[in-house]
Length: 251
Image (cartoon, rainbow, N blue to C red; front, top):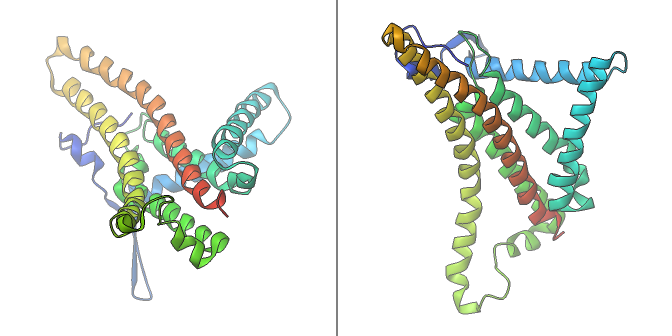
């Protein structure tokens, strides 16, 4: 759960600010909240999996069991169901995407004044979506060759006279995928965080006997955002597996 920005405008909390600026060799690197909390999410993931990899203690066994169940679900219900056994080699990639997005979604719900969800920034989700898009194209060229890759834009069974119409539609459909991936994740996370901030703003500025009502709304919305963060990580991973299946299955 994020706290309200000092200015009183909920949107101000979602604007990126430069925390650290690095100038070297004519290049400028700005470390913003999005970058910082992506690093934090990676650190959390590494720490959780390192702890779960140990066998001592009932708490460690419990965490290990949860993570193993999640990994098994990703392998069987996301990877194998969409790509078959040939897609197992993509399991580490899809599992990494799932957990990275999940933690990035959840870390912004930590009740600290400086909490920030990296996935509520379009630059982060666009980078993830473009990575998936480029990966699918590269794998399509590698597995099917140039001719087979280009043939993928020609729908089967379509009359020749309709090809000038259908081929551009297929190309536009492929190019639209990274936009849908990026905007879906960004919009869902941004909307949820905005609602939480609005509730907190109403609680901070409302009459004393009404402060509890929006505060309860903020808590309930935060709990709902935990579920939304899980669903969005699942959808992004599932769509990645589906897009890859189109080139893996036909190779």
